[in-house]
Structure formats: C-alpha cells, structure tokens
Length: 152
Image (cartoon, rainbow, N blue to C red):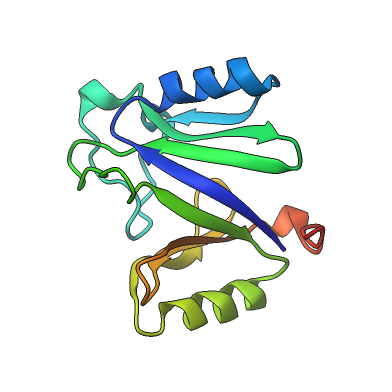
C-alpha cells in the first residue's frame, strides 16, 4: 500500500507544479487536462460540465519526488473552491478491490463520501471521501498494478 499527498488548487496547478519541478527536478509522471475527459464518461461524481474556458486546466498531474508522488488538480469554478488548509487529500493506492472496499467503508463510517468507489475512465477503481475527522481521502486500485503497491 502506498500513501501520497494530493493537493487541490483554484486554477494555478500548472504554475505550482512547474515551480515544484524546478526545485525537485524530474518530469511529470502524468498530466491530463479537463478537455481530455472522454465525453461519454458518466461516472457518478466525476466533474460534470467543466466550463469550456477551463478545458485547459489540470484534471490530474503527478510529479515524483524521491519515493513519493505529489499529485494535484485544478478545482473547476463550478465546484466549491478550496481554502488554505482544506486543499490537501491523502491518496491511498491499494493492492486489491477488496482492500479498496474495506478501507473506503471504514473511513466513510461517520464521514461523507463525495464520490463512491467505481470503475473510472482512466482504468482505476476509485472513490473520494471525507472521514469523520474532516480528513480528505482518495482510495484507488489499479488492476494493472495488482499486488505491486506493497512497498510501504
């Protein structure tokens, strides 16, 4: 199992990650923009109707920093904007669907699920929630990595 920080920004993710890249070096492991979301995607809780003017904003970006992967996104203007101190989530990459279901259910008890666990267009089984202590979590299982996330 691997835990990585996930940071949300109000439209300046690309600037922030280029800054971090200039300090830590390396290349972006992944970068996807909102305009690249498949139009046929209808997964529950996935960003719906991002304003056209924001299509070039970052849906997901990741930068390897040592053995950690820093990940981030731009929050579209049609969603609640983040405030300082509320823009960080912990992203857990688990080893199986069963682990994802178990961990998601446990953390969601007394909390609130923003996006239920479901198969996503990028290939992961993924969900988001806030636990009863106001900590934001992203739970992710990628079948292509089955059993390969046990480094932590």
